[in-house]
Length: 89
Image 1 (cartoon, rainbow, N blue to C red):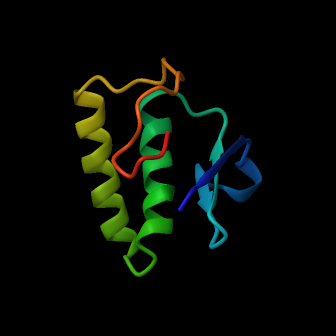
Image 2 (cartoon, helix red, strand yellow):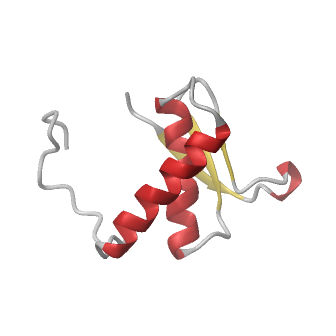
Image 3 (cartoon, rainbow, N blue to C red):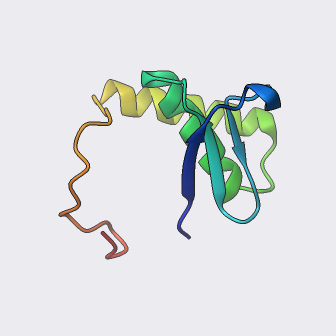
């Protein structure tokens, strides 16, 4: 599954992020740093675990965000060189 992400202002939706069943995620473009990562992870988890409750998604997204942030994940390098575990780039 390829999740497509779009960044735009979501103020009129009163949301930081949205996910739809077609595999699209929208993230408020004004988010930065750790909060942007949290909301991206959160919305992706909604698509991957459609039966999970909002409470479960919040707990998992915060855990993943804190782990990735602690491991120094940052949006810096967009070079695609190493393949992922499924063989994709």
